[in-house]
Length: 443
Image (tube, rainbow, N blue to C red; front, side, top):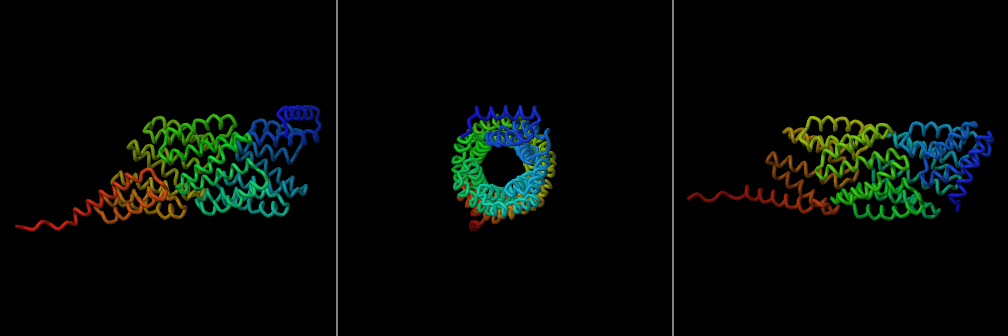
């Protein structure tokens, strides 16, 4: 195992090689040191190292390492330029394995930019090359990335299939860091499907591995994900604790995209606690970072959250404005689950404005998408909203029918609102029974 002291010595060799214009030594040693530093999230150091190497001339490995560092710190466009340079050089040299790794990373950049068609194309170019050269670890990375892509499209069942292909390969090759990534991703699928117990189990398997391998960025991601589960379970104190553990790590490793995600999630906790001023402050910190790093899906999420906050404040005009900014972005990036959430939220605004026809229309647009992506929690929320709209119209039959679905979904996912929703259903059934009683006989 390479020690920290040994790496420091190699870094000094690299510095002297650059100073002495010894390109071959600088390129070889720089790549060795860079790969180690990437594993421990020293992204700024990797970028500086690779940039110094490139002052001596073009080098595929230096471009590749710098691309990874820039991608990890939320700069997808410069990362893409570096990967495209490395791809051309690897192809020129006939390095098939490195070509596949670079194709995979280009796909990952496009996925982060919301261009999932381009992303899938690059992943599908990488996968057969990795199998051809027998790179089992690289094959697992690409399978995992294809799963992540389908997860972003809201196709969670397909995502789970690819993650479950990747996981045993990562264990087979002893890729502990990669194993933690895939465990995290599987947890994310189960969380999206409303199975928070399963989600928490996978995240809790991932967390000690991220610490074991020194993956600070992965540790922050996992802490953030556990916070999301606790927030979904209504335990906001636990959620805030995990987010506040994650935030300084994202800043330490320079993960701007992760920092924005965590800021957004802390905003959500404060909103849930009723502290809308704090919530708005955190959302407004997250939004410009998401725009800066080109995270279109994340930008739409934060816009949607700000809209939800304004709706809670009774400012429905502002709420509608933010939702209407979010919706086309979600359609642009193919975020079906997010699109459904925003449609549902627009429906709630129109209901609050007294336009129940329009409210019902937007909620009914959301419902089939919720079913399509397997979001049972979102489906329960949307059906509850539809039930309340029917109830406001005096349509008890349809309101009860929707609430019966809600209670069933609550039971399936262990939702904390089960008791409250059951009580509302019983109340409406009682109202219905009262209206159906025959009138008393006339004397």
